[in-house]
Amino acid sequence: MLASHAPGGGYDAYARLYARHVGKHLPGQPSVTVRNMPGAAGVIMANHIHSQAARNGAVIGLAPGAIATAALFESPGARYDAREFTWIGSLNNDVSVIVSRADSPVKNLQDLFSKELIVGGAGASDNSVVHANILSRMFDAKLKLVSGYNGSGANVLALERGEVQGIAGWNYTSVVTMKPDWIRDKHILILLQMSLSRHKDLPDTQTILDLARNDNERKILQLIFTQSVIGRVVFAPPNIPAAQTKIMRAAFDKVLLDKDFLADAAKSRLEINGPLSGEKTEALIADLHRTPAPLVRDAIAILGKP
Image (cartoon, rainbow, N blue to C red):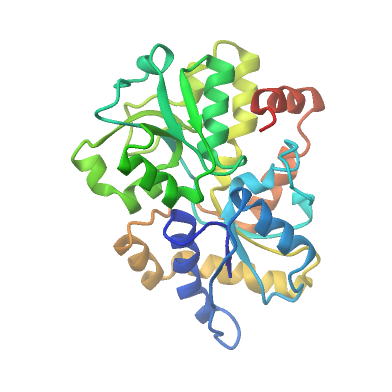
């Protein structure tokens, strides 16, 4: 199993969680080993799985839902058509949040548009960069982006050290997993949810959709953020034999009902929220790629080039 991000972050944790339990639901109960292949928010791993990984079910990956639209949105380096992958299922509907250090000048959402917040970012396709660009370009947020950190773990360490004052795209599940005490002790403030719906833990925190000023902006945001519904997605190379695909999807469905898996997830503070079957994931991605070209161009204009 390939993990799209470096050790220590949320994607690595979810990949290892899944790897610990899926083997017993596969024929022969194979052991599953995890290999990290970070870079470009999952695009490097997706390229590898698309063109180089064995197409017999022996190699799978876990990555952010953004890999499903990277090529659609003309993200640099995405050399694949996401519709060709074998989609096994998504473990979580991700809600990304914008956070600031409590000692920064930005104390609430309104401050984002009047006071500068220095935010850390990873690769060009990572939420921490993409979401910062959306807020700055679409809503004139006063964000100063410092990018180039090697994954969420390094980004969080930069925030802890005070190198940056916030993160503009940090999955809430990762916040809870990596730094639950920061929420408890109010070391960080959650300013906005970069998602289409509110997380159950954050009922009073606005979403990016609440900032939309007209119907066209709302449509652009819905297109961009539908990928977050796909969340932590498990997938395999193209052209896997139908029998193998059926086996892998059935195993995914069984994992989601596995009491040991659910207990392990709870112990590790890894949320399993709004999972999608392989069939539903595949259908959602196909639907995204049927988006009218003018709307896609509007989204690309907002996302911009790195």
